[in-house]
Length: 339
Length: 184
Image (cartoon, rainbow over all chains, first blue to last red; front, side):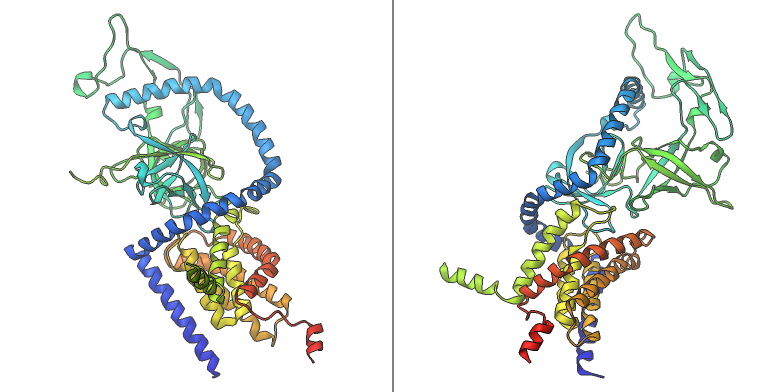
């Protein structure tokens, strides 16, 4: 065997061994790796900022050339959409406010009671095998690992790394991302509820009280001004909108819709249909509070046996084009240290 | 003060110090301009290009060490498990360095081709190694698109990358037929 082969093999073996040691240290959450990354981050940030400033004209020119037609079409589409949405927004805001009031009265968690921090996206992952973005807020703004990140349209991801003034956000499309979600039946504006086989129109009736609801037996309290009457508007068959199913939403990489798994097969699956709303489920162990909009069911993939179906989800937030984000300063009860 | 400056200048005229500075500059470009731009949804990989150029210019033994160090620097800014990029870029450099075993003095086009092939090997090795360490979900049909785009971009940029590594390492310029004839 030639001498250089021995030397070559020795070098390769040594470097492979070093890589394995590094990977093992990182997988075991060694503080050495975190510290090294943190120190390098501090040293490299000014270099990166300088490079970003210098290369900005080139990046802008590239986007100008490659995205011009797409942006023009999108702009036209968005103008139409805004016109359509303006009417619906007023009705939706009123419904949200009513819903939040009801949740607050019953002592249930809701998004309105959670503080948030706004941040701007300053960078994307340079690797083709991660789905992360960098934002310009960090621990100095109260951000912690695990916090939910959303934009105006819905859930976007979660914080995975935090430095003083920067954080990394793992996008909802990353294959490592998982979150508990609930699937809620679609509910039309005019009170229509639909199922998978037939479409039925159920009239909305106005009643002075919710059927089966006894104020003295629950925590529900309400105050009315003298002379005012409280009217609660509900569909005649409340079961039609109350059902929900839970599952785990998983990302599947860029360009692929996330899927929901771990739904046991049940008779209610007939009710899950394309268009059903997907929202975060919340709970003591979930990193996100309940009620954040995730998307809608776009496709149902049936599986044999007792396995439940796989639901494909069309996200409401467009994760490929993010700018301003909101980070909910929410931690599940299991993560809050005891005083 | 002037002595210190002279010392600093002398340090940065050494080949490996120059290569480190070159790697830092390329890393800055990777995390800014190449992170913000993409072609068909795929980001260009200039860190992979640099590692491959080191392998093609310096041979397997020295190239694999340079590739490992470049990968280590890349690991410091990535969110993937630490050490994966180090190992992948060492593999990339070793693959590119193997071009030297097929030619006595590889011509420029063979080095460019070796850089492109090594880049493709790197783009396959990344999701494979991620899968091994438990980060699943990346080994799908998209890898083919990533390999094609990264391989093509790195093939186009390889003459620049090879020239930069040759400058940093103070290597002799490639021998052309004309020069060889004049030497003879």
